[in-house]
Image 1 (cartoon, rainbow, N blue to C red):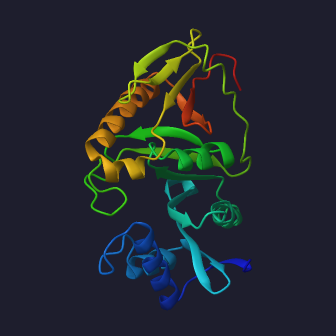
Image 2 (cartoon, rainbow, N blue to C red):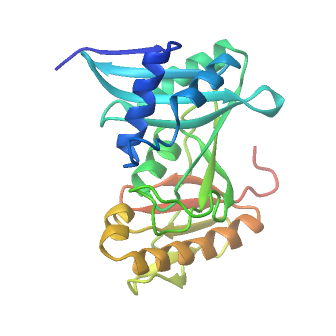
Length: 253
């Protein structure tokens, strides 16, 4: 297997390659990448960082981070070939810590279960905010035809990977039904945990049946917005596609 290297880039040619890579990932026209090279140049010039990962000579991952209010870091975008996501995110983390930040935030599609598992279970971030239709209508090849709800991930850079309590999902009553008529959400009687299921592969579902994908979007949205209004946060994601939402009770650390 080719050797993997990760570094920051600042030159116009390198940033142009990153812009083109993001265009391939999000399936946008070559003339309309999601992050034009000139935008990336401006972000680097103002103190942000663009990291790239290479397998040998091939660009296989990239990320963009900038400083936000309060000196924390906001990860604008990150994408990588399978097996490189953790390395790219850890490179962002190292840069942020060296720059004095202690927290990193980013948004992701809550219906994409594999991303939720990576962010919440592998990195140890917490879903702290649910935003309805964050970007408005999107026309790229991955998100087109859907509403752009996003979950904000907040990552404690000093203590990544904190464990979470998954609770007893199977013993909890069903509170909502999914578009496939299976259970969508369960809630324990103590009011400490809610579990919410997402479709197996929403990207494939959007392509095959956009109306059904939209029904999933709105069903999951209902569960999350109700839960977050009651003080719950997303603390984990199981391998079989169930979020764990947790509410701290009095006396919790």
